[in-house]
Length: 515
Image (cartoon, rainbow, N blue to C red; front, side, top):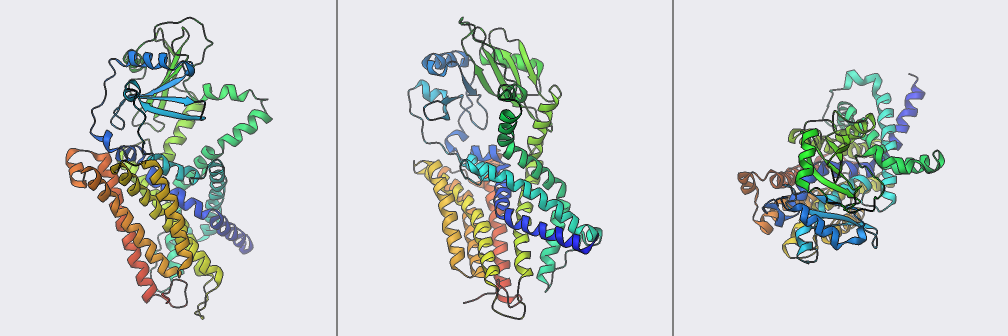
């Protein structure tokens, strides 16, 4: 390959990485944590951890009463079945007034109780992964970032292809820090390349599907695609109203029908369409463990229980299989704990790629014979510290704030978001007010402290300290607490390394300790 071509791809790799790197760091770090989405949902709700799982023997009568009390819903609502993650039978419905989905345990609705403030920590971390927490435009931004991410991967592979086999396992620590960071960047990037390609492709699909859908709907199919989209991507069956009331089968009978046709599927969600009508249907969704695309659904007639549509692993369309597989490989939901921790490690390794890419950019512009470094290198170092380490600390702060707010009876969702976004803004500002070396050490110590406080806050607020959770087999709570300790240890080790680099590392660098 000509040297001019290699230089072109090198510049392409560098600038796509710089442009998209900050957003990708946050997405990967939050993505590593959101792998444990269901465990975080258990951790964030102490009151539900040890509550008995509700039975569904009388669920049919209770759901019928809910339908009768809410005629404005016109039979369009859903029920989340009780489970270990949420032991209550929970109603979900679309509130036309607010334009949002609402949910509340059915028992609270029956007792006339107002919904208590609920934590949404798991959803907050997921939002950071998908949209950086930015409303509306965030998911489109991440779609574009995902495309740039794929471009950076391909151009990086082309740049390093000539020396790929020779330097693949080279990791040469020493005085040449640029070479060390280059080696680490290349090794992690190449060895995890298949996973990163999957993340880039699926991330772009998930983020941009709304835009692509709108283009095809209005530009190609004259609006007909909208009516075909839901039937093609779910087990929903919508039939015209008959205008005749009929008795509805209860959830226990419906689940028995589902078990007969999809015995491996563990149902957790019932979506009712035209409940109470002779032509009412229900979509029952769930997961089939140990499959690449575990999520599927069964469409049933609410009166007869006849199977109208079957979309489960091994018995679904190619479209559903591809979509389910993409979701599975993106989130690691196709395996058990081992796969989850593997994806956690891959997420952190991906975040390191973008952090180390910025360090390489800074090292490449260092003036080795002068103590005065370029302003652009200094600002990039401050931005890297503030955005990357600041976002890590902010996410840990959200965990601590959510648990503290729950303990004091405050709104955990509100305080978690204040701690996350407010903490991030504060730490980012602090990074730009301090020399890069000092800011890096200080923010790493803050991140280590806040991460270590995750299990501490849980133990103080609930009494579920780490060893007690393990002894009871509460692995979801134990896992989140253990994750906090793992992150704290990692940040503490990085703080120690950054302090050593500032004191004893090469002079004439933005990372050298300054007064």
